[in-house]
Image 1 (spheres, rainbow, N blue to C red):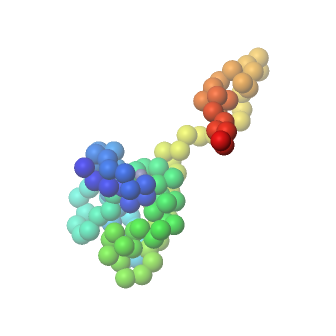
Image 2: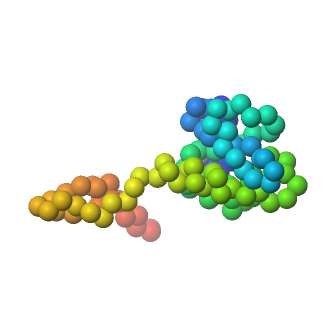
Length: 109
Ligand SMILES: [Zn+2]
């Protein structure tokens, strides 16, 4: 079990992305074989955003300065579901994506 540097939740290694610092950049260690300190992150843009906001990468990777996480951003960006606005004629836009439509509205007490 490893802790995601973004959401701080523990997860299996197989569910996380290993990243290492190379020459001031955060690179994705897809084979989990690169030497040095690694940080673990869910392949999730939300977790990446959280990690960047709290500067988790330089801290976790013991980097002296800021690290460029562009490669990680590109990597996790790919896992995002493509947003398609296109729909076939005859299908109503509300017929699918019930998750979106059925999102519960929390009422404040
Ligand atoms: Zn996470």
